[in-house]
Length: 451
Image (cartoon, rainbow, N blue to C red; front, side, top):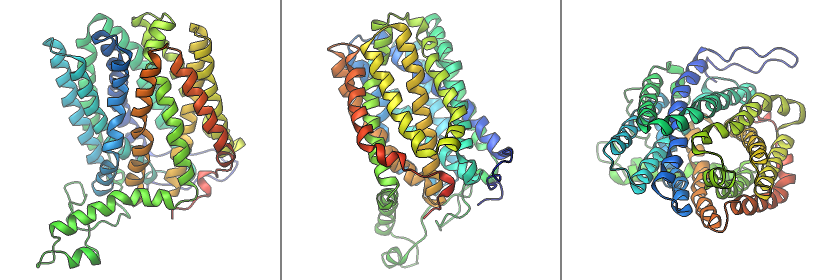
């Protein structure tokens, strides 16, 4: 445990502050969340201006999620090999350049649906690095007992900024002029990159990591430490040869998978999460069309309508730790799973604006509660030096399969905008029922020790 990480308070005592280093991580994440919120609202709204084909609109979600299938594990290796502040800074800076390119395409009138898909895809690649780094930083700063509280605070900050601030603001700015929305997006990512590089050294996560080799500019490693096999295959001067370096990277790429698959707790949780995520992707890939066309919400009010989801998510971020303390991690996760999917089914079956808003409130809240607790379990169960790779492997299967769900949702929407909600929720409830007994039995994070 780093010097900044503190043990959980004794039962019955008031939790103390999470520390200045954690507060600075929240501040850096806040700026990045402004850019993410603008991008996530602007992309589907720009898409519906460029095409009215539900399948092409669903490709925006595919482009956003496909990088998790292709790049999440290499991103996890990167996060585990270099200073995590540098990973955050690079992700923010390069996303700012991509955002500037999107702005230039719009201003020159050259933007097409295919350019938009490329930009969203590039955003997704960089998000695999950022997301893995910011999640891996947290256990370096707080104790295990504080992980649910810390993750709830990160989730709450992202919700407030991405949804309460960015969603309605982006909708109205796009209705007035996309230049303002896209320009603000560029600036937000640039600021986030700069703030990440200013984080204190404790956020680097280098303590306890076993990589050897040369130290990088931020204390990271430019090459792995040679083991017995790599030394045998290395160059005559004792440095690593190309074959051993490739073998080292290959071993690191599969390390996250091996850890998850060897864990009696994480393996089934991973499988359930992937299947449920597939169903949610089918439900939400054409949600913008369901809201605009089926619920008759004006385009300028799209982001404001989604504030129902923001409110649900923020509520969940505030109360999840309390619910976990009272009822236990497993029961809360099982309830969130079933209730959230049931809400989507009701929204599809009764396509009224009021029902839709209530369903979005409940479903987004349940998803947030699930995410906070799953993240806390992983962070408590995984050694620090494996956090990036396990996170990347987890997201590779979870978010990497979501493009398939998004395509299914786009095809289902061609027969009616309510169909993805009804079919996706029904399939998800079946998975939740099969996995219910296992999910209820999940332990609290503070009872776990990293392997």
